[in-house]
Length: 303
Image (tube, rainbow, N blue to C red):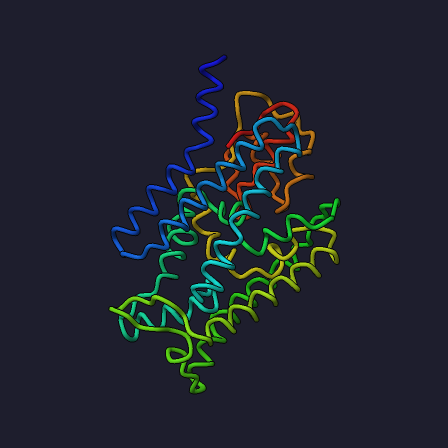
């Protein structure tokens, strides 16, 4: 029993160790001191969340994840957004990609997208959405007890917002907007700090996301309505999530089809269908929040 507790305690600190390793590796590779703050902070926040959850029961175990996602929020909004003036939203990243393709100028934000939303999902799927999204960090704490299913027809709106997120920056550039002058400072081919224009886009974009997210949450009686209906970033991670290394999967315990996992899933995944057939949950909507494992009375699901 004592060995089992020690093993469980050690597992909780693995995210912190990974964060330290990634932070040091990127610092050595890129040379920016900020990585020594960002990734250990993210890993440490996840470790704290796991530690908080270990003594909770049922849906109460989700408290740890919600604490984690709230702790990570200042890294993206305050440190990177306000202090460093780096906008990690999809719209701004389109500018960075175009700048890189046209001039070879490399921007740190591209590292974020590569780690969190392109390559990382091959390992943890949409775990970023469940544990690190700064928009969901607020939505997950809204005083909404219901978790209604979002009709399928509304989820297609994401494809429109994704298209707009890609083409609006391009239209700005085609219209003569000097994005490089307004947004970035060049130093040795790497952006060290954004300009005033980047900060304005940051505030406007995030404010819009929060306002729309909160309105949708109360309108549809679902905290994550924004994720299902509007969020364009989810589409970037969907293909990798289907083949991700880490996915909810059945245990040796038999599923009794009580449907509690489906009722409590914030992303409307039909978990019972996967687990009852002995399959991994390969849905591209899964955000690895772990709620299905928390509420299963038979412990028929694990991550």
